[in-house]
Amino acid sequence: MRFARTSKLVGLAAMAALVLSACGGGGGTGGGDGADASAVITANSTEPQNPLVPTNTNEVGGGRVVDLIFEGLISYDASGAPVNEVAESIETTDSQNYTITLKPDQTFTNGDPVTASSFVDAWNYGAAAENAQLSQYFFESIAGYEEVSAEDSKENEMSGLKVVDDRTFTVKLAQPESDWPLRLGYTAFSPLPEVAFEDMESFGENPVGNGPYMLAGEGAWQHDVQIELVPNPDYQGTRTPQNEGITFKFYSGFEAAYQDLLANNLDLLDTIPPSSLKNFKTDLGEGRYLEKPYAGNQTITIPTYLDEWSGEAGELRRKAISLAINRPEITEVIFSGGRQPATEFTAPVIDGYSEEIEGNEVLEFNPEKARELWAQADEIDPWGDKVFTISYNSDGGHKEWIDAVANSIKNELGIEAQGKPYATFAEVREVATSKTLEGALRTGWQADYPSLYNFLGPLFGTGAGSNDGDYSSKEFDSKLREGLSAASPEEGFSAFNEAQEILLQDLPAVPLWYQVRQVGWSESVDNVDTAWNGVPVYHEITRK
Image (tube, rainbow, N blue to C red; front, side, top):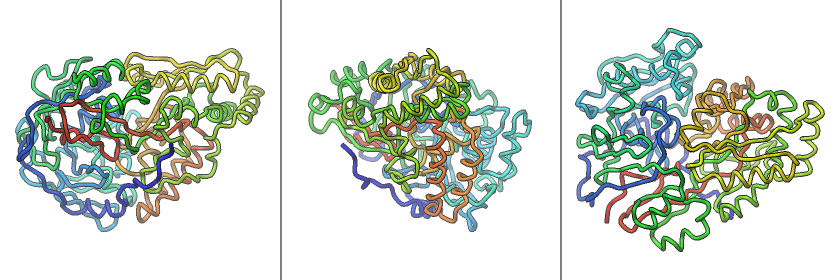
């Protein structure tokens, strides 16, 4: 089935207006007034790749925890609209110079105050080259970023950040960017307490945050087993926990988690395994599942740093691979129609999405054209008896569709193609971030904030932290800057979609389909929903 484009998020211009003045109150202590918070909720997850430092966490296993134990200037409600959290106001007159005022009496869970320096120091740490943070690229808009992020730079303070007083700091961007405030709900922009800078790696093993939850004490993170979170009793934001905590249990695959769910040994499963998609609604029964599109996609990245995928021959091969993948058949057979074949690099629920971007015919199933392009590449640089591999994590429920994609490529191009499994998400991410891939990589994106740019800059911008294929294009980077400097988010849509035209020509990643979240829960919990980005709204889940 194809999902109608009616679930659009709140317009970006309206969202930007919301974030510039205090909005949303919330408050109170963990548990909430009148909340049925009688027990801890158990949910599936994977072992985080790295210690839980906001600026060095860019995968979902760590991201879902960091998002709950830290609170930034803003958060996003279930529809994607920004809501002020630590920020009392974010003001600008020119979209380049911002004055940020914090709400009073905000604290970390160790009792230290959350101050302007807590943000400025954390952002400078994230941007500095000497700290090699995975989310470094998120600070590239701030004046002085180029100096601190340059290779071998010893500079560690961006000129665009200034502390005015304990509750006020200013931000100067390198250029006007109308949608910059929308990014500030992403975890990379979280504050850090002073103790973090004494030993960041040690801090990441037992982080001190300011969010709705905190680690449940010593031993709360049992590596490769689980992480236990409990409500932060001093939390004053809008995401007040309605339960007594969240325990994320790490599974080696969704199949085992699904069996635990059926046995009521797991309260929440955020991804139904492909093998159960035909039956999960019957298995769980009415009122124990949901299914809805979200701001996410599935792709495979083919590294441009590999010789066989570089130059003209590499470009021809990437297009041939894309044309050889039968997306409609795979989404119907493997996902029971629960995915929508991709026509570009973002997601239909994001404002500015277009299914008519020039060059997107390369994402259609066209085996004859695929064979033609592959033959042209062979004339330039013969493929020989190489094997096309797609690396993926076995603990993520990907085997079925990876095999289907590999078989489609094999059947249409007449080459050997197969999946290359890694036991855990952390393992495959380590190979990706170290740029030691030997073939393609299963990739995908769950939006950090509701913007076309978020699907483009962090993944394909030169030097971006999630640019797994090491793609670089001056023309593409220029289009990104053009879109960011537009007078309004709406005016930036055309530039971002023109940037996608470049991606469709170069294909540093091959878009496959847009994601749909299928979630199931036990007989013991209520009030389960997912947000605009497909993440369960953990703090609202209650025990019956």
